Image (cartoon, rainbow, N blue to C red; front, side, top):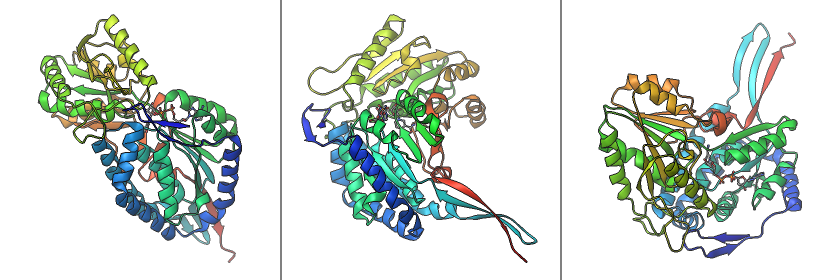
Amino acid sequence: MKIINPATEKVIAEVRDDDAGSVNQAFYRARRAQKDWAKVPLSIKLGMMARFRDLVVENKAKLASVLTSEVGKPITQSNNELNGLIGRLNFFLDNTESVLKEEKVFNDSGMEELIRHEPLGVIANISAWNYPYFVGSNVFVPALLTGNTVIYKPSEYATLTGLAIVELMHQTGLPPDAFIAVVGGPAVGNALLDQPINGVFFTGSYATGRKINEKVAGRLMKVQLELGGKDPVYICDDVDPKAAAEATADGAFYNTGQSCCSVERIYVHQNLYDKFVEAFTETVRGFVIGDPTNEKTYIGPLARHAQLDVLDQQVNDAEKKGARLVLGGKRRPGTGYYYEPTVFVDANQNMALMKEESFGPIIGIARVRDDEEAVRMMNDTNYGLTAGVYTKDKTRAERILAEVNAGSAYWNCCDRVSPRLPWSGRGHSGLGLTLSKYGILTFTQPKAWHLRSPG
Ligand code: NAD
């Protein structure tokens, strides 16, 4: 498998990918290792994860540079991702013990009832490339801490990062068979699903998530799908348009618009529309696009060449249906998978731009009459990952957000993930969750103990 730098279009490495045979061997190694790994005391497991965190800190510059070279993520943002990883690891280090504690729910005249949490067994972690450290660690860290062994398939677009993660993990003293990388594209992911695994934890697109769900449906195993989004933000008429524009432009264009929770569509109250559009366009005009190894760069290339076609199609469709292009709207000529930061105004719900995930540096802005129309527009989607409202009035924000069908609700913020809160999508955005105490328990199965003492 050739690893291509999306900024230079040069092959930067060649990696041998797995096949059905090696995936099968990985499964049997992981299965043999699982029982012993589950018996390792939690304190030892936590020590290994703390060592992993320290190794990430020690190797940060190198890891950031590898991520930037294969994904095209601007180097400042690669460093930000690694800094954010430390916070997530600390969350798991601080909370796993209390979350896994057995619970005594009843104790009366010789009858005791307990809940204890057991691992699922061998789990598959099929991962995405856009935040490989975040989306990977949300799964493999709590999965390992709760006693599962993990077969980890990094995205084929973040293979070098995936292999670096596994290497660092093994340096902590973690048994190599507790955490095994399999490398390759869809065929390797598919071969992994053919194994008698005990759960699949997937991060990626709705299209792939659906295929995975269908493939394993008859096996009645745990399936968790963290999928795409078409996340809306509503700008009320009582905010400072410049501050709201700066915050939401960052939410839309950070990571070159390739975040699952990127702001993907913006609805603005009619009273503030013109001022907001002007401030938003000004902000986006100031974004530095270019070489992702340069610390000043804010917009890099897209990670995948194929996504350029998706953006072209959305631009053509939006223009045909009457949206007004105020910025960008085309690929940047020259080397690299670059797309100019693109802003459409007067967009509407008939456009792919407002309905389908763009996953790139492009945004549609639409005018709404009032809060009621904003809620209707925000809910006009098959997705349901996040939604945000900008207003000075907390009661107004909570009233609106309570009506919106999304896993995360943001007041005066966007494009934000917290390890302390559950991360989940509704509808086409997924099934199940990661992060928070529930994102630890999700890698376990409860056993109900009914204990009657003989006396
Ligand atoms: P993708 O669906 O193309 O690929 C994801 C993974 O699935 C890759 O490892 C790929 O090799 C594997 N795969 C592809 N086909 C498969 C098959 N038939 N069987 C088994 N495995 C298969 O997605 P991507 O391009 O890597 O990621 C981008 C998508 O991920 C976006 O839609 C984004 O919104 C979403 N995402 C969601 C979250 C979240 O937390 N909800 C986080 C990050 C990314």
